[in-house]
Image (tube, rainbow over all chains, first blue to last red; front, top):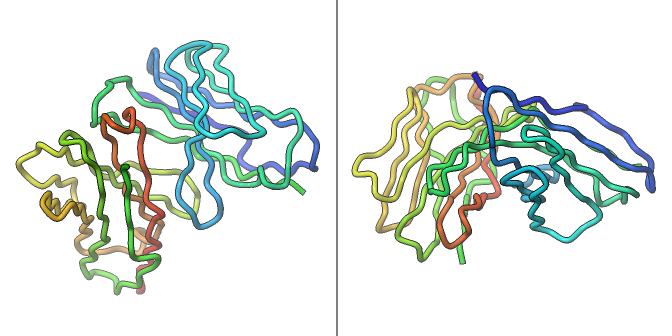
Length: 115
Length: 115
């Protein structure tokens, strides 16, 4: 069966420090991969998605970047964190179907606090 | 433009009662899919149920059913015989061709089940 691992679960970082969040998927090949951010009590905002190794699409211009160095690995990074980068970050994967019934499966999330 | 509206920020329901969570959507695409996700306090997003725009019957998954009213553009989630473990945030989402198959999310409804 497929599983998704996301770490760390919690992270407290000072303003201006770098960031690296990692997500890996097991049990599937060539998944679509996603990074979402969720502000407290709010809905999900799509940050990046990837349809293959090295292929990254950015949905929101910001202080963050994403990379996909391997088929089932997705990394969210920042060179210098801002206070506004605080939030709950969720990684997700899907089986590419290019249709309306493509379901997303999520990791357990990372709570990032920038102080 | 595509849009998902969840008008209930929060709901209190007595245990064992049925609960309906509202979701209305807007799209000009005749082909679309509607999803409901549950987010417990642990943070992970859990897929609950899917309804395609061309599906003839309302979707059901165990205690979850989707009351799909296409003409009214509503896709309400019905939870029968609510349990304490149903307390969570619930998100409605839509995927359509004219959103490049990216999920459009509602703001969510916080459901609290009272014992």
